[in-house]
Length: 484
Image 1: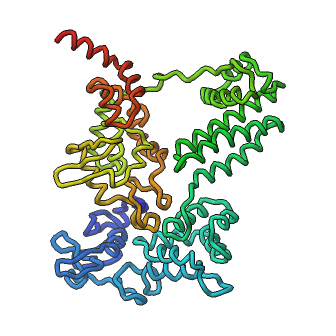
Image 2: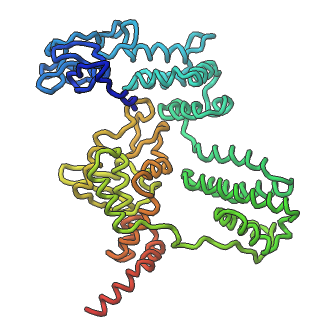
Image 3: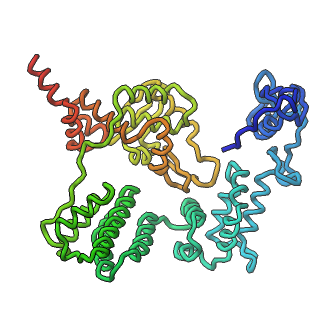
């Protein structure tokens, strides 16, 4: 994302820029007039095909269209002395791409051998050929990134295990993702690995050897066993497992502080613990059921469960207002608008939206269809417009992060879709995604039978039935049937 412009200063710079019309310092005078710093930089980065057929940098303007230097008469040095290509220059008459290439080769070459590890060659090529070389150079010249890549270059053998031995940091995981996406490392379930590492450290927070052993068993035979049976660990499974263990640890530590052992637990103890804390303590219900089943806690105990239907719901008027804002504004990112439509119109969960691929979307000149669950759903205009724009500019395509990705909503991490939590956070400035989704499902049950809604939107019939009961849809259809 480019930096925002500084405020204009018409007193210091009384002559406006001939291109943007704003009052900034004039840094060049071209045939179309004086050009400010911002428009000068933009001109160097404007690429395309001129009306004369020349392909390259188009710094000039003729009839409000970008034009090459020859046609427009603009004098500007954009000829790289190294590769000879037309491009924005970095320093010493060399373009950003050539500078980036030298920096990458220098960092990823082992100084002891003078050569680059085979596993790092694909990474080097990906970094050197990324479309936005200036972003790559800015990232790679950060002190922590430079240090990590130097250490990586001297690693005897590049494997997941050798990476695990390097300092734990976001940079390590990002580079690991790049190595996986470009075929240098095999793909593994990172969430599973992260959970195992987190669980090992979490156990250390438990007071008492006995309770520590109980939680180890709970983690191993409840969470890790279920994860081992899954093809891929979802973000929801990962977060729920962490929360359940965290609450279980807090509960056991509370028992220790009050001199209570788990086999001696009574219902009154549970009631006091639950009443004293936040509503998240209800999550301990799953640990308690496991403890009773494995005979480490007395039978017959229960935690007050979560009451369904208590979450706030966005009313119909609020849904309509949010949808109008999404459709008729350009201030919201195209990707956010496309996701918001699926929530406001079809009640989709953020996690399901994040998992969409372009195989689920069909775009023709007349129609845009999206497959939700097992049904193809058509988006009429203007709902289809953000999806058409997203297909043209999917985003995250200027770096080395997504060489072959098919995700509709690409994430910042290499090869991964957008984090659903990040997506809901981006939409929070317009509406609460949970409240909007519940409000949409509430309204949809008034329009169609439960079975059809469940099949079309990918929900269980029981879930949609609860919304139908809450909206009195079934009773309304009964009255209508009696009348006819």
